[in-house]
Length: 326
Image (cartoon, rainbow, N blue to C red; front, side, top):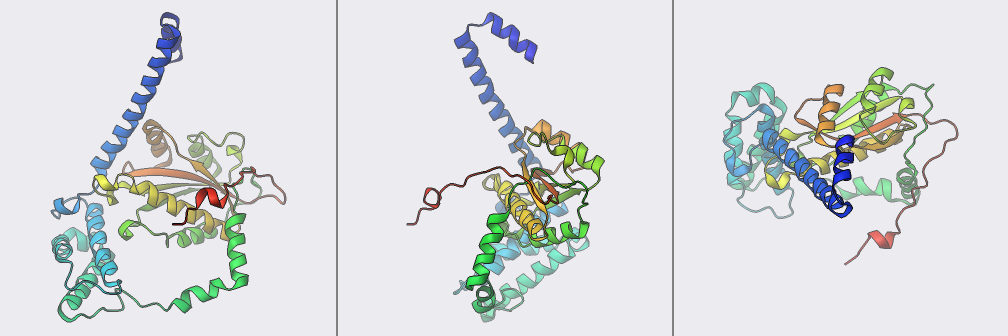
């Protein structure tokens, strides 16, 4: 490519070369967007009005979860519509007729069946069972964390997490700490409760070295990363044109909660972006053993800090530059 560039530059006037270069870059953006779209089409589930009960078990999980959660959300309203959910009921009953649902998705089937029962109870008797839409007292949620001392602790917790690029390689990362951080992140909100996140964690030096070399933002410290996580999302749990970007939103939320979970365990992190072309994503999938239907959101370097370490200044924008109250 470099040789071709020099040859073209030697024969083409400078203004024309710049124009060609600009248009070539635009074509690259279009190409990568087209590949993203083709992956979404290939792996994504059907939209509601096209759902026929067919597809893989993961596609079925997508639809069942969307619809049972719609019932939960409807019944959580202060004044639920009465009656509601005819289309939801039809799709759930259609999906539940597939043997594969009961064979491979018993937990999802249980949630769907209880939601259907709750919907029937509401539509016929206006009864909302606690198991579907539990009542929570605000006092039990907010008072323990909103007193003055707790507020200060929380502010310190969130503001004290920094991106660390110098780890203590003499200290191994405890697997239980990573498991606890991942468990904490499971409370992350997701579109219709689909929880499409996946975590691929590497703690052996040779594995970390092999995987992290695919990321282009760890120069100078990548060789001293004790543990590495690759955050992905299962593309099969998203459907239709309107959800084409949702996997990145859900995956980003999960990655941030995972990082805070690690922070709570006393572990330092550095969020490593995955702003890469699809060819690079394919190479990382092959190297890390990640299935083709998973999209890569980011990598997270994990380890312990030394007693003293430097971090980037990373000045924050002012609140007024971010917050607009209307």
